[in-house]
Length: 144
Image (cartoon, rainbow, N blue to C red; front, side):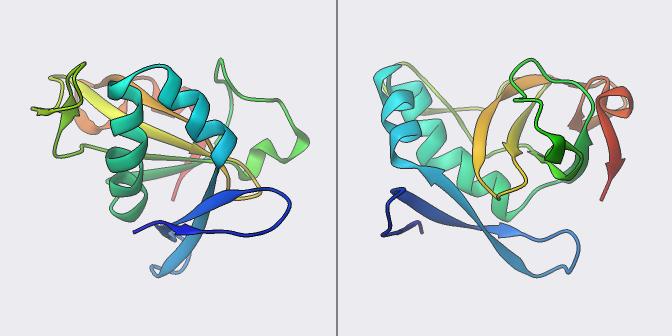
């Protein structure tokens, strides 16, 4: 369950799997980001509330070092940025009700070098491995 953070930068903290230790780590999502996502509708709000925490806690794959991504900020620290991948239990309909996950797609959550989740979305999966995105070998430097 998310917990509230309380400093100048308002955020929630989510538990995440730490691929380096096998234990747990913390990931932040800013309140401003959540509010912007909520304005897009119930699908995006439900994904933020339910799918993002699920994928962070129980990823099927974690990649490090984003080589290219249309929404990457291109910071020097991008080599340490991670992508958590998985198949959530549900997708969400426009009214916010659960639906089956999308066929042939995997859910991605992108984390920057400061452990802030900055983007998340459905993408086509690799035809040989439904737990990773198509083109993962070219997109990321290594699988953790």
